[in-house]
Length: 83
Image (cartoon, rainbow, N blue to C red):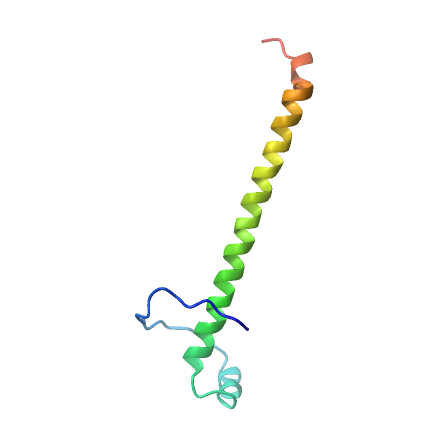
């Protein structure tokens, strides 16, 4: 699990509701539950940013393909437009 360090080291307390049993079990593995949660949240944010960037990139590529097609072939609406 490789994490990207955050730009800011300032911490902010937040309230999170978690299963009591899950927290008890996690405490068996770590004394630093906040650190583990922060690490996992950092990974989640990075994956989500990549996923959303990919969606935007795919949409731009699709629009470029449609624009190229329209330039080469023309619009299907051109044959049917009354404007």
